[in-house]
Image (tube, rainbow, N blue to C red; front, side):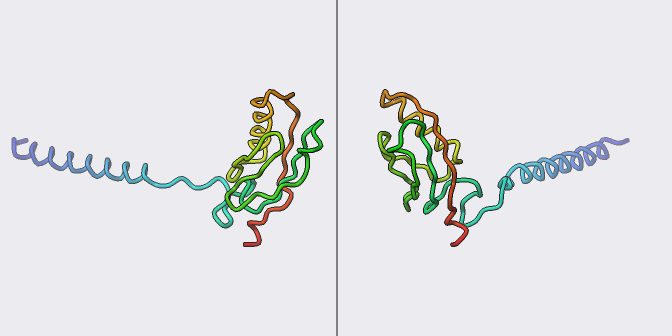
Length: 123
């Protein structure tokens, strides 16, 4: 092989490597597919504005009950205060309430949270 042939091969190879690198970069920039389909921009199974939550707190009947999530994504819970719950799963909301009792120095109760009525499906 001549020196010019080797130079031409090097140019072709370097161009090929650049194309492969560019396609790899494009592949890495793709947005991930959500784990579940969304309705009105909210993941199914997550709390959204206007949802109704059924909250049960052992030994604290004043806290147990139904709570409608406000348009700002918040609920107001006795003993705990205002909590931003929009976008969270029910288990994470239960943890927020439990942590609120812990921060207040109160006995930490067992808390369960369910989405009783999802209003996002009606939008």
